[in-house]
Image 1 (cartoon, rainbow, N blue to C red):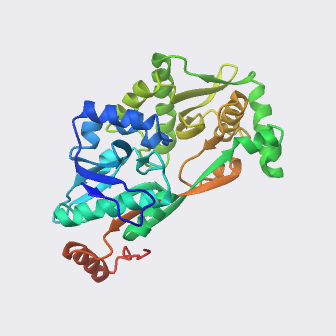
Image 2 (cartoon, helix red, strand yellow):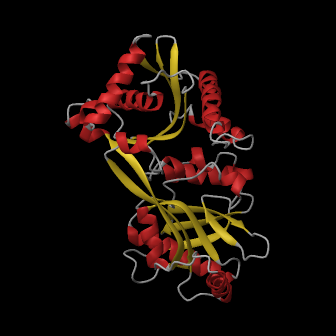
Length: 376
């Protein structure tokens, strides 16, 4: 347990070690979540889902302001063959577990200032380096302020930045509340033509699953459409036999909390598609989707039309401020979004590196892999 340095705006204390038992961790995480402003991906609904499989060797960093707990960061310690142990923030380090893809990742803090985030990483690196219990910190899908805090704390490398587009619903309401009219002329034409074609089958509507059983029904139908789309590309997509249990458990956890939306978009008896959304802190994250492309007519666009209908649905609810498409620059995201935030995947090490860190960097240079990109 260490005190914050004198440069910190307040004297915080930091404690790092193996995470407590699941029941205790759930309690302290949920209590802190009520006082913080987490993203869905730092909420206990996500973090605690399939916990034992995703975090087989969990470590917890706690931040105290006096006796008050003001910060938590959960890591999994994972050692790959012939490599030094790495601590993964909000992830396991195993490809099969991490294929569910965490985004908007970071520590859970009551006051998530850049200085506090930097202190978290600085003390974490100190614990790791002094204890000789690992060499690196791996941060997948981190929010930009988390990456900036990490840069101030140590040396960042293996940096990959991806754009997460979103639609600002607050601005859209101020513009009159009609999405299509704000798009380019070509996009307006395509969407209106698609809408007219679908309306020949009946009124376009959005239905939200009202119960857990109906949510599972929607999810199963989404998976069928999602897999069909990806199979044509020669790939599996997001729903493999290993990830299905996680998604089912996530729905069961999130539905009672009002944090999971399974939407069905249809025109009369025709189903255009399904959306699997997360809802947290006035933000909707579109996590996965499945659309009926096989039965779409020439000018029908089930994906664009479904997202358009969903945005209008959340717009009229009056409670949602952002429709987040998550990471990726797909064409439909560029068409329907008006803003974006960067998400960053990076590795972090102490600025005065240990022998293990120097060894890793030397090997990366020798291999000529291009992985070593010093940015902090």
